[in-house]
Length: 250
Image (cartoon, rainbow, N blue to C red; front, top):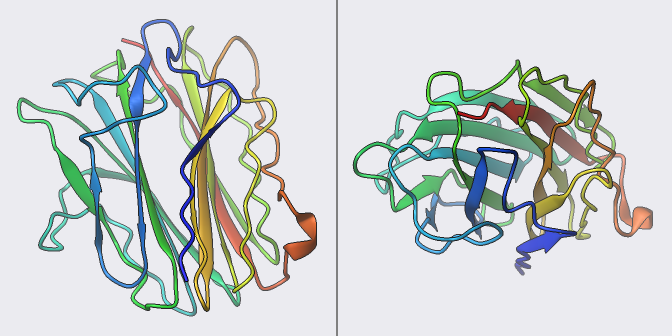
């Protein structure tokens, strides 16, 4: 049985940092097979469609058992779209986390949809989020090196500390967790402005994926832990994978 949630928690930071706008987000979910995520209706931002020059970031997550999936962004035929890979992480526990992050800058014919990889099993969840950002530096879209994170024995996601260097940088942080038949939902980092999330419960292995944003002001920034809404349902067989990044304004 599947359970789908797509939400904005707390105040949507639709404007992003100075010069950066969050156009919006698209979400999708499935199980075994590759699945489509349409970019035609974007939510949680200023709205509108993808335009030339927009930065698109795809976040793909799947829960598995002893299966390490290539988390690339695909076309309808299952062929890689050639987006730049930032992250492809695998955490092996009873409930394994597969997490991929890929990006591209929209050309003269912006994409209308992407496909995320399925989990390879009808009892395992697969999730996808795509964020669309405008006003990002076209030469150096990412302000500093990304900060990956991840762990075993819990579903709690703990994104790492980052130190941007450019005024108006937009911090993006979050991640996903894999769990068993008991569904888990996470809170967004309490010190960030907004979180988009999607979750799917399955008969064997479910998953949650959440991405939050925050305009950087100064110094180090350490996103708060993404705690479990109902802590009593965590399990030592769960796993998680997370990240922190910063976008540089144009």
